[in-house]
Length: 211
Image 1 (cartoon, one colour):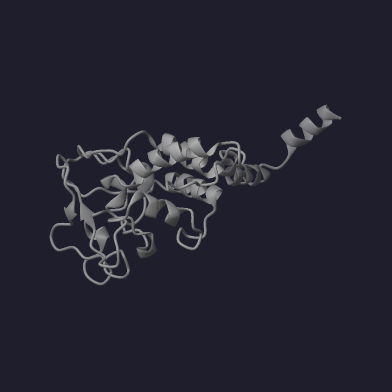
Image 2 (image 1 turned 90 degrees about the vertical axis):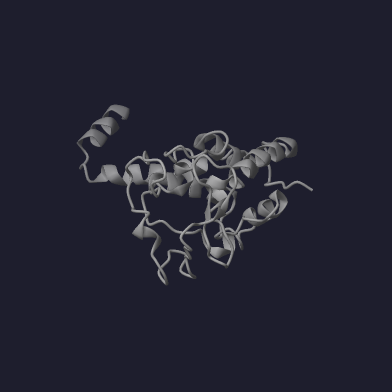
């Protein structure tokens, strides 16, 4: 019986292969989540502190600004963040459609960011995070309670946050770029994979926040 099944699979039309691959891609992110409750609160809080260190790092926080729609800069070689130079205003569109499109300088490309002081780029149009996802000026506790709230995080549960990270990596987005920004830019602590694991661990612990 097993031999017959194996022969049938080998002789099956190749069109069936993408279906199998697609299904595998859909379940991969969820399988990264430890079982709910398998991580204790203490471990979950420790994981959150590492997540917080990433989210509040300029490489991640600079595009999570409020309704003033003004991006933040942290120039290579500097520690202090400041408003984007040249009076850039992203507008309510968050992509600069009302003024100067972010893509005017930040081209869409998957090529490495190698040139110092050149506008960085990712695999899709450069833009600010949605205004509801503002992190700049917020404490770690405030960001934690915001990130665990589906009404304020794009409708995502704990597994959905992990899926969000993986999807962004698939499209060469902003999140993995933070650990490979090029041009002498400072990176957040750890690695992208460390961050994914910490978000998953925090989720499995019930997404605890510091008191």
